[in-house]
Image 1: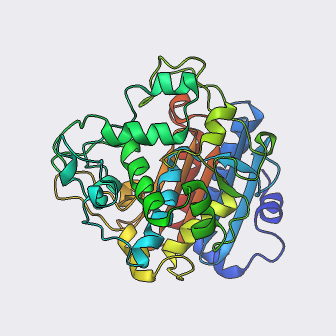
Image 2: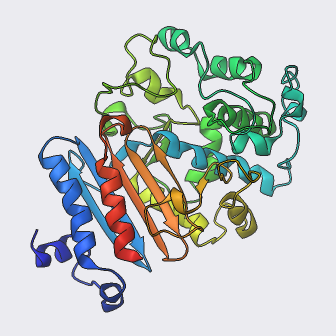
Length: 363
């Protein structure tokens, strides 16, 4: 790609000299080229790259994506988004992180459930499983989210709460049920009013919301082992209308790259649009004891949450549908890479290659 074309297309005609001094343009060229090549060769059906660095923005779309407003299925990037909505209730004094879950869900008892705190749900040390053992049958019957919740509340624990780490989608689901019980509102509506509207995330929804299936980009087929999913589910497909509408708080948010960057900006800059600055800070620091993986509240935290060269203050998340997002306060950078290629389908994945070049450029 010619340098002049890159600058005009990615940064606009008003690109400021401070940004030119702050980044190595060759690496940003390469980040764009990685995704351009992946789309041209058919490796990715669609992609988006959105980088905000010290006030300047790079926004590009690839393949079937033609606009920064195009919506992707975020998969597990949904977790910090859902948790942020829950934490608006924390700001109102409706719960404390070390409250027992049974305070809000009285039937959440037995098998050591009585000991589980909301903090443990959000940091993957509750003992709840990644996915329900009966996920396949729930999928086949197209069960409502309420049935997923009811089964998560009584599913057997894998270990004593707080003793180990196990990445647990069901922990996030139960935490969002706490939000439903406190707010007395359906979580799909609650997250819209508590988070998307205040942040003006106009191209975001948990589930499909007001959008139609054809308005969101389809995911590419999964051909390899799907970690955390029950292979007994018949015709499992990210593009299923059932899955897209279900609104699973751990994986069901649809959003544009621009909106995801707006969300991450709430934590990088702590402007207080939806959460108090001290609450935003609380969400992006480690809460797990020494010896366990570092986790914030819904976020992955530490240098490993970004790409090589990122600082220990970095926070972010990836998604199984081929998405990646991180923010690093040390370099004042937000990096969002959304693709339609499931993460298990390529190693190295284009999202990682692009992210690595962005990190190299800004550090």
